Length: 356
Ligand code: NAD
Ligand code: TYD
Image (cartoon, rainbow, N blue to C red):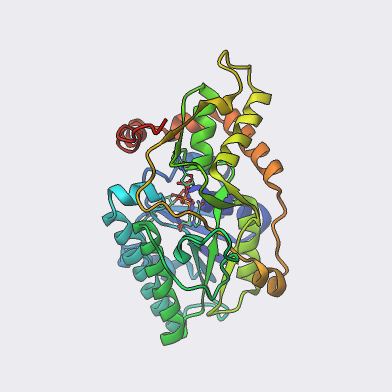
């Protein structure tokens, strides 16, 4: 048996592939373009493993994708590949439309051809990994979004993911392709590119640098430990119903300031004290992200009741493991933070005036 994973050199995809290769005897074909956020170093534990076939390529390359499906005859496609960073989508939305919309369309179309070809296993699934951001910003007193919540994407990133979700839905309803979408909340854990909140703040605070919190720091996100997410995806792949959507979240809503404080408290325990005092004193409020969504929150009642899944990790235990992982994996960080990364930090942070 074989599965095709796209974006398996990125944060969640790599965690998933490592886990899958460990827990099953199935082959993984891993299609990844290796953009700035894809890193083969994340997969070094699989070097020499014949059940992991890495292919460098673009999900928007129709010929390549069709060839991989015909050759490897996967029983499932798990589609992680995407442009994923909201701030980058503000500076350059075109890549988001190309990969997230055109790329997903290309993959769906190739999957449809393959599914109709007679060359495809009967229980084939197309699993589209998406985001809570498609539901837009929730008010403080609104209940968490369930799967029937209206779509209201507010950033070029979330709009491109919403467009992809609609295409996925249409391929089920129009052609019967057995698709499933999952909408997950903010993931954290090992192997996340340090442009996102948790690894960025961990790296900065460990060095004693200022911690750039956007706006008033009271934006709320739900935090999901990446292993819990991978566990949920396995559950959805095994028992999820084609045409359905499943929310996946950590049931853990926190403000950005609370998250940063938790990271600082961990680092204060692990590292020598700073002369300036506790690391939470490094917080600097900077100009807000344009269109910054105030709150995301997801109801996980459906996946809990129908598939028996619930998150296993508390934020306290998950953040402890995560911070420790970044402290212990400086070589990985050095590897992913190339010159291009420094250019990104200059572009995103140099023009954000401090609000204090
Ligand atoms: P990531 O940015 O860490 O990794 C994305 C991977 O996709 C990289 O390896 C990159 O090289 C690859 N890629 C990009 N464009 C490609 C293309 N055109 N063809 C092939 N490969 C390409 O992202 P992630 O955090 O691992 O996210 C994985 C998925 O989960 C995405 O679809 C994202 O929208 C979704 N998601 C992530 C989060 C989160 O908190 N990280 C939350 C909700 C949803
Ligand atoms: P991020 O990790 O970019 O995920 P998303 O925007 O997809 O939720 O950001 C999480 C939250 O942290 C979001 O409210 C923006 C905020 N943030 C900062 O305050 N400072 C930063 O430097 C970054 C990267 C994010």
